[in-house]
Length: 299
Ligand code: ADP
Image (cartoon, rainbow, N blue to C red; front, side, top):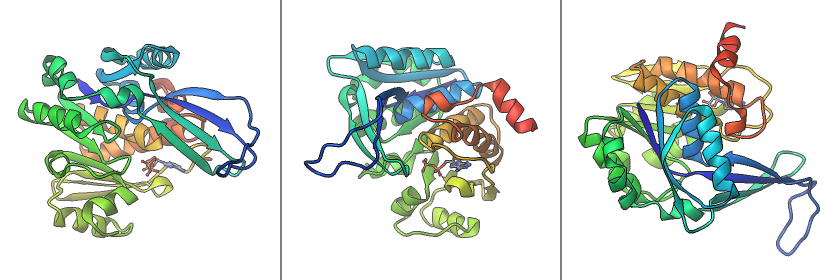
């Protein structure tokens, strides 16, 4: 079983001709409201990829919270670890212009209430997971408590160092698997090693990181495990919206880790899942079910 502890957000998107500057008002298309939040996205992808998945997090007692519970449940995620908070559900307010440039304001809302107490409340359930997925949209105390618990219970902790922010060094050092894009990799290792698999592997090794996947957008990804470096191509697709691509990838990869599939093979599956996801708008709303994924792989 896979546990995902972290954020759930409503993504509120308005498309405009041009992005508004300070003090400016612009007219936009009708508002689109979709389920998002990095951890919720990862949990949905993980369940759709076939893993028994538990979500631990918090939403407000409002329509956005209801939408998120529904989206997770529809994908087969166990939401018994999602509690109600007395503040609004986390929200991402997104404007996108006709060229695809965007601005995003994230309001943590209920996600900001997640703390070590929540890990304590969910301790029995978390001790039972074989894989725990974490990202940086909730506070360090919650992340550290969950990571310590699952590490000491013998589970595998997977940290997505995203969205980039100052973070406890212990969290990064004690994660058993790191998932980073190229910017996050540069921040973790303190310099940009570029895209050559050997250089990426050397940079990770120099920081004592033995198990990691570095995603390179349309260039694919590089998986490093037990001294083995695997370069995984992306699938050539017509990308419409890459929102949640990294989360789709991470969720699928966690399902593969739980099934004891080697990291390189897991990354290949994750690459297919994420490729389908970028051909549609939205995060969770763009993720494929098994029949569609199998059809894509067989084409
Ligand atoms: P993030 O969104 O976290 O920055 P990336 O952009 O690196 O993550 O994307 C994660 C993965 O999603 C990539 O490794 C790749 O497999 C897949 N992906 C992303 N963009 C595309 C694309 N344009 N075409 C095909 N696959 C993509």
